[in-house]
Image (cartoon, rainbow, N blue to C red; front, side):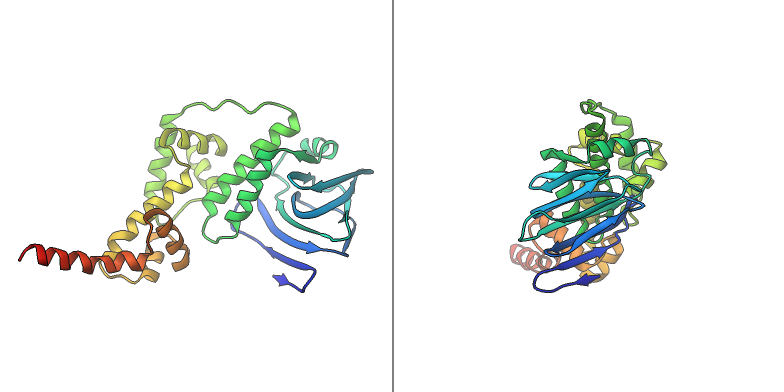
Length: 278
């Protein structure tokens, strides 16, 4: 859904990512949120301007590199803190995202000035703007979960440990479902592993996160099909890409050329081979 004008704009959608109920991007100037509550966790960053809100009879604000996490079932309001309004990006997360015991921690400390958390939230929003990146989005969400949990508890991040056997099992799972794909939640369930540990074990062992590995395998599957003359649209469907633009974006990122340019290169190769044989 998109509601737009010159001043106030709203864009909302529901991605196919376990744990995310809704993505909400908005620019507001005059709108004032009355006291209300959500059934979900609200993860908020402000890209321009500033927001002020009341939560549990205390006033809070969000701007710049700050991140705010509002717990479910706790009333809050909200409005622009300056005359120019604000532009925000929000993730509404399933109420099971944290345990119910964590609600009190979030009420006491709903706002964080943490560059790592802010960067991870921005990266997740960028990923969610592209359809077909569910594994990457799930991976980024898992890392955000861990960072928030550490911040709410006031603990240092747990040290990363090698787990080559688990990493290889995940690689085998991704290889078996290259075109079909799999979410991080489902992969963790199949392998009986914590999602964040799964990401970190794989990245440590193979030098790239699971979603990058899966995309590279799909590109490998696409290459011979393109050289055989299959149309890029059909190649995208056969190799697990959401659509042709999804294939083009990743193919060009990895190989430095579009699928069409790659497919046309076969003619040049044949001409050179013919000349060499004369």
